[in-house]
Length: 218
Image (tube, rainbow, N blue to C red; front, side, top):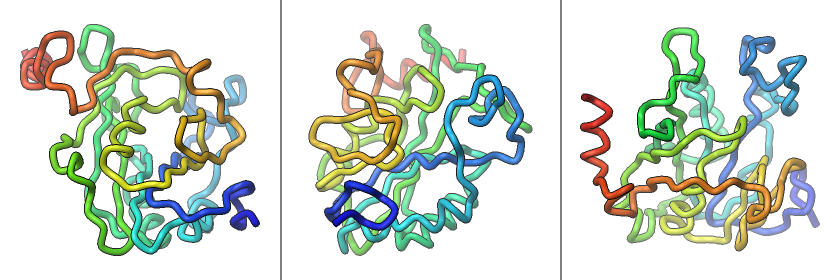
C-alpha cells in the first residue's frame, strides 16, 4: 500500500532526499519555474509542501536532506521542523564555472546567488556514519540544466547516512534508491557527467581545496 501522497512508495527510509518545487514571490521572472515561455515544472505553496506526509516515510531514526534556495531558508527550516526533523547543519553547493571561478549567472534580489543549501536534519538520535565525520560541508560543481543538482549529493548521502534511500521530486533515477517524481529520468542515460569535487577527493585537477579557494580569492 502506498504512503498517502507518494504513490508507489511503501517502505520506511533511513535517508530521505527532497527537492521541493518551491514557489517564489516573483513567479514571472526568467528564472522562475513557472515562467510562461520556459514553463519548467509546477510549483507548490509553502502550505502544500508543509502538508506532505514526509514523516510517514521516515524510520524512527533517520536523516533528511532538503534542497533550499537561500531566500527561502526560514520557510524551509519551519517545514523541516513540522515534518518531525531537527535541523542540524547544511551542505553548501558552490556553483562554479568551467575554469573554477564563481558562476555569476545566478539571480537574487539583494545579491547574485552562486550557492544553494542542502539542509540536514535528523529524526531521533542518529549521527552520520563514520565517513560523514570527515566530509566537508561544501560541494564545488558546475551548474547544469535548470533544477538539476550535483551528482555528488548521492555519493555523500550514501557514505554518510544509513539506508534505505529515497528521493522525492526526483529528476533522475539512481541505482540503489527508490524515487518519487514524474520527471525522473534514467540517471546513466540522461545525466551529463562533469568532473566535480565532493570533499572525499584530496585534489581536483591536481589542486587541493585550499589551492582552489586561494585562486578564487586572488
